[in-house]
Length: 325
Image 1 (spheres, rainbow, N blue to C red):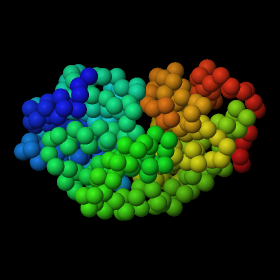
Image 2: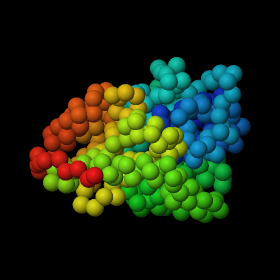
Image 3: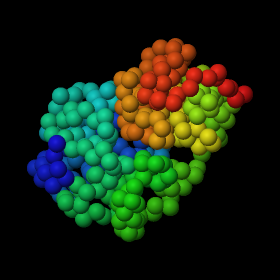
């Protein structure tokens, strides 16, 4: 694994750089990629982001100015906030096996790059990118704005348990550049479309509780998205909803991507290690936030995730499912 200084030195030797983001891109992967792209450009490098077909409206302003033209041919390829090759978008799979540098912060990071750097203790990959960029060039307001998006979104506006004192120190340094962080907070954390509110209403109406009410499961089937005529913009970060439910310490959000293909997002307290639970189903992430994708009917997926939780939680108690409806 590279150190921060070694990573900065390697980036200084790169040119014609293509930066990859993960499937269903969140603010952390987008903000990291955009900030790194802008920093490389300030060094006189040619750098772009590979177009991501699942980009949402909230992230577009940070991504689009850095998006690669169709005819761009990279010399070097870098990934930001991608823990495994399974999280590569379809158009990024052509670069499997030729990632020159992978930058990440997940404990489940697979180190698939020719060179790799990971900081599992960081709440957001943006914290690591901030340290790297600080050795490359001044962190100007445009870079800082992208990094603030990265850090704030991966910590739920600094509310998630992964937030540390260092997270706040990085955020403060970014704010000191004069960025409009208030608009970021408003757009990402305090604005919801009517369709989004309708999705949340249905999820809460059909949520189920297990393990003496400590585990809550919420569902977003394809039929619900179709019925609401909802887009990816409306569904962004739906996994944060379950963690707000009183007396629960493990929330599992089931999002149907294709018929009988379910993306599970697990958000937990200290009792349940989300990474270990999701690893049992082929996924990974952080101790308090992880995910996996399972192809099976919903009833089977529910059984598998409950079994995985039971195997990793000593005081798990089998109890009748309680349904809110």
